[in-house]
Image (cartoon, rainbow, N blue to C red; front, side):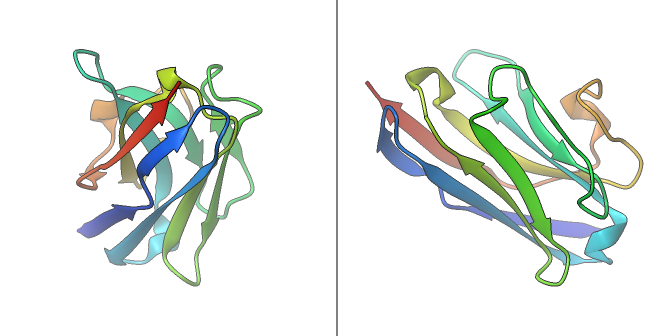
Amino acid sequence: QVLLVESGGGLVQAGGSLRLSCVASGRTFSSYVMAWFRQAPGKEREFVATINKNGGSTDYADSVKGRFTISRDNAKNTVYLQMNGLKPEDTAVYYCAADVAVYGRIYPWHAYAYWGQGTQVTVSS
C-alpha cells in the first residue's frame, strides 16, 4: 500500500510554468514506477508522463513532449512534473499514479494501482 499526495497546482497564464509534486508514503518508493495523468472536464483521464523506478528512463505524451519534464527523488519519496510553456488545453486535474509493474505510455490509467487525490491546474489565455 502506498499513499500519494499531490501539490503545486494553481492558476497560471498561458506561457507560464508550474511544478507539481507528489509525495509518497508507505512501501519503498523506489519499488514503484511513477506517472502523471490528467483529466479535463468531460474527457477521459489521459497519460502525461512516466518515469521508471530508478529515474533513468522517462516517457511522455506527444502533447507535452518538450514542455514537461518528469523527475523523481527517491531519497525524498517524491516525483515531480515541471510544466513549462503551459497552454489553455493543459487545463485539467493532474493525478499522480504508482504501480510496481507498468512502465510506458501504452498503459492506460486503470493499469495503475495507486492514485493521489489530484491537483487542479488552470491555464488562462
